[in-house]
Image 1 (cartoon, rainbow, N blue to C red):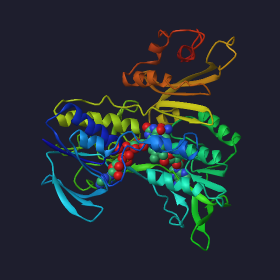
Image 2: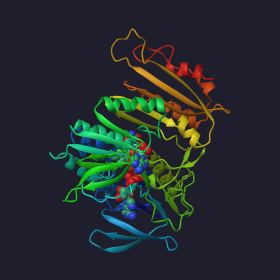
Image 3: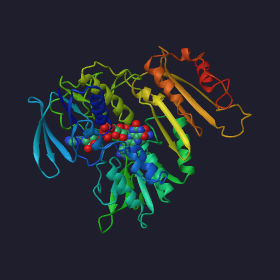
Image 4: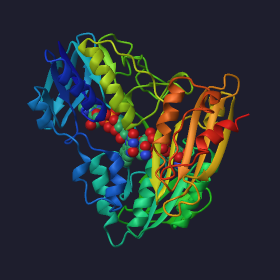
Length: 445
Ligand SMILES: Cc1cc2nc3c(=O)[nH]c(=O)nc-3n(C[C@H](O)[C@H](O)[C@H](O)COP(=O)(O)OP(=O)(O)OC[C@H]3O[C@@H](n4cnc5c(N)ncnc54)[C@H](O)[C@@H]3O)c2cc1C
Ligand SMILES: NC(=O)c1ccc[n+]([C@@H]2O[C@H](COP(=O)([O-])OP(=O)(O)OC[C@H]3O[C@@H](n4cnc5c(N)ncnc54)[C@H](O)[C@@H]3O)[C@@H](O)[C@H]2O)c1
């Protein structure tokens, strides 16, 4: 059996390793247009903000490791067409050599691409995106220029907030713009986003919310020097666009069923509408247990899991994904926030009628004087069924591991009432006897 994998980043790597490690008879061909693989974009802001020594540790594998396992791997090679009828991939190397590769099964792991704001001035120098390692390098280089004093970040989602922090840590004036009236609007409700907005402002970031950029202007050398919005014109020396990702799924758009954003629609085994073609990671849809429907969530964690699922199914072991909750987290200037499932706001957008319960308390009993910070929790549940559909936590303590339990609760359709008397251990070094999870659940109407 010969399997071709297009795209060798997180999803493609997970699929390849699953096949190579478990199904020795498989012939694996991996193709990627990039010169590197396994880059953890999540580390870009840490590196650019000088919170880690450099970028070297942000790669967790390389092409030699796949060759050693027996795969054939072509880097800097672009697939420009797939002939689904003849089960053939048409590729072109960076030297212009064109060649065909046939397959029995195909796994498309072509990922996502940043959404480009289609506004005047978008092609000026000094305007960046942050997806590839090379784009991180370009941002880092530009930020090292002495004449770059003011950085505009367009989009205050996860990438925008993280790179705004990094730019501030590099001593820049930072202007953060978003079309919504808060940061992180798609992940948290207002009570939580307000905490992050204050945190950003307290650390010197100038917030411009409900203020999308409408144009960029440049100097005589064609380098951006102004951001224009409906509310004003701002002098800037550099722009970073981070207004979201969309699926990179052009290769199969005329042959495979696609979602409203173009992602390949897949079933729980990652199979597309073609029996011999699987799609994984950011180029594919995913099943959300919170909304109980197919959706699109671009995360490395989902990419890895979907790659494992596809690998086993292609290898011959039937394995269905349990679906996801879109669990995510962020840590900015010491404020940590984690969420899973849907917020009250997102429930409204999905026409799901919900209630919520919340609680705020110190992590540990008040007699613990050191490292004892406030924790804020909100649990969102469906009004009629009382099924838990989301949770959000914020603290300056590391409370991140709590979110995994809520992820499992959503996956397993537990109700808010089942949480009330859940056995949660107590030790003052860690937590309180009247735990904030228990207290929030007991307060639920
Ligand atoms: C700055 C940043 C920070 C992030 N932080 C986090 C985080 O903290 N946590 C988290 O879970 N997620 C995070 N993400 C999201 C995460 O990186 C993506 O969800 C993940 O990369 C998706 O993996 P993927 O393999 O599906 O796709 P991609 O990483 O997009 O990889 C797709 C691969 O396909 C190749 N390819 C595409 N088209 C072709 C073609 N025609 N021919 C050959 N090769 C092709 C590309 O070169 C690429 O290597 C972050 C992303 C960024 C950019
Ligand atoms: N910590 C993490 O888990 C992490 C970190 C980085 C990226 N990621 C993932 O990578 C993907 C891409 O991240 P992202 O930050 O680009 O997307 P995002 O969806 O997190 O945020 C995009 C932001 O841009 C705003 N926006 C949209 N159009 C706009 C416009 N025209 N003008 C101004 N603002 C506009 C949105 O309101 C939103 O706040 C996401 O799926 C994200 O979850 C995750």
